[in-house]
Amino acid sequence: MNKPKIDKKTLKYGSAAVILTVVFIALIFVLNLVVTSLTEKHNLVVDLTEEQLYEISPASKELLGDLGEDKIDIIFFTPLDEFDNNEYAKSVKTLALEYEEKYDNIEIKYINMIENPNLVMKYNAGMSGSDKLNANTVIVECGDRFTYFDLGECFVYTQDESGNYSYYAFNAEYRFTSSIMRLTKNEKPKVVFTTNHLETVPVQFSNLFEEAGFDVIKLDLSQNEIPEDTEVLIVNDPQADFAGIESEGAGNSETTKLSRYLENGGNVMLFVSPSTPELKNLDELAASWGIEIAHGYTVVDDENSISSTGSLALIANYVEGDEVLSPFHSVLSSAENPLKTVSYNTVPLNITPVTDTTQKVGAIITASETAYVPANGKKVSAANMPLVAVSYKEKWDKERQETMRNFFVVGGSTWFTGEGSMSSPYGNAELIKSTIQNMTDEAMILSVSYKVYNDTALTVDSATSQNWLMAFVFALPALVLVAAFALFLRWRHL
Picture 1 (tube, rainbow, N blue to C red):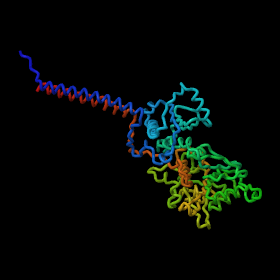
Picture 2: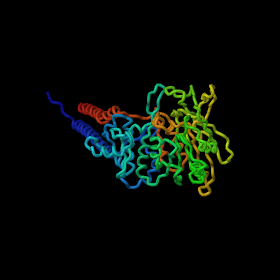
Picture 3: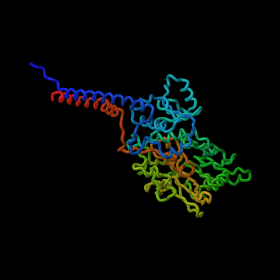
């Protein structure tokens, strides 16, 4: 029997097919190595999410435009590859990589806490209160200064009626940009908290201003003048009255200083509660701006309140219609599924007529139609009663060629600024941020808002990512190899 002859043409094409297949597979592996190497050095993630979660917003770019050349380190204490095991932690790392990619002087580092005990001691010494360095801490460092936040602070949470928490929005850009600004911005506008009247200065309320780029000052008005560059003056939970006209002769009238500050375009925020005593001089100042405080009474709502907390935790309505005040809550109220703003243990506020034609009085948030005030055994209607009232004056500025406004804000709840509110799954902190932004004309970090998650957002977890990797790096070349081998066999038998 004669051996079958191998056609040279068949051998030629068959060999070419095998060679091309081998070359193709080799190229796939080489490409994978190159891409992996580049990904470690550069952020090659393409942001396909509707919310553009991993993009640095124009507001941040404007604030960081003159960042300078100071070296800034973003330090993680969890190995970076471990972030990929959780889609939310991974999103923080991905955004950090975007900052590193966009700014030459920003670098991401990982520090092993066990191998670097001296650094742990250094950072712990610079942290406040009970805060201690842990695996979820993110340090932003510039020279010998640093600031920090927890990974959990990169997210806004919401809570359903059963008390279950869920992710609502991504807030890492605010954390990164505000941290960088705090370390690099030299000139800061001032916010003043008054003292000497048993006021409180809640830590998280104060931190909100510091994160926004303000220089926070505590000031006794009986002994000091209000600094000229004060953007906002805050009186939080006063228990004693401010010195009035009776102290004018000695130059210690605190209400005179407040009035002068307001007349010169300053902004005041006053937070009180049902337990705040009648404060004649301070009450008169608020009344002169069209806001009256009904001391000793409490607003109640049995229907529109947080059931787990009780009828004193009022769910607020956002007030529309005033083109000046509506933007104070627009970030919240314009969302598809707005966060609830809650006012707990609230004293009634009444808006009274003002005679000044340049002045207007309104509210940012109000109680619901079903709210009432228990008084003398009766339920007095508090429908649509202001929970945060705002009075403002307008003045035409010839030099700027625009209308300037200054504000007097009165909140009927001191819980609104307390630790429970600032860290709660409600919109209180965001409302305060927006209020500050709209009261001041500073280009502050407050213009950087969180990004609400959309149900249709593209999210790829670690397992899915690995599956795609296997498909492109192994499965696809294998299919090509099988197809090429089949083609080779066919050509061989031609």
